[in-house]
Amino acid sequence: MRITFDELSNRDDNAIDLLEIISIEGQQYMARLHLGNRLLILSDKEGKTLLFRGSWQIQDILGGYVIARTDIVYPSAYHEMVGMEPADISPMRIRVQGQTS
Image 1 (cartoon, rainbow, N blue to C red):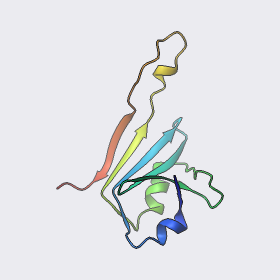
Image 2 (cartoon, helix red, strand yellow):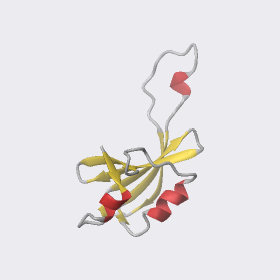
Image 3 (tube, rainbow, N blue to C red):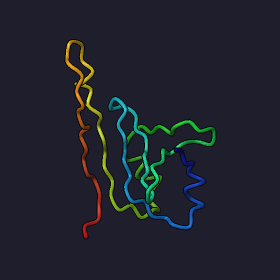
């Protein structure tokens, strides 16, 4: 599912459980938000995924929200190499911000 910045701003609750900043080939980034049991992609009003030049842009635009945890996620391309057997390789996940209990 998708959410626009306006829809996010109009929520009563300004908490984000997990912000995943997804790297797209190391040059662009998208924001995947975990809000309760919902998983949402930050998108524009036409439903197109918002892309950012750096992880800092996403963190700046969401700076007014209470974010319990932020991870930068780098999908692995190794399983796509020619001649290699298909494999389920987990993405590299770097925790950049989070609250501890």
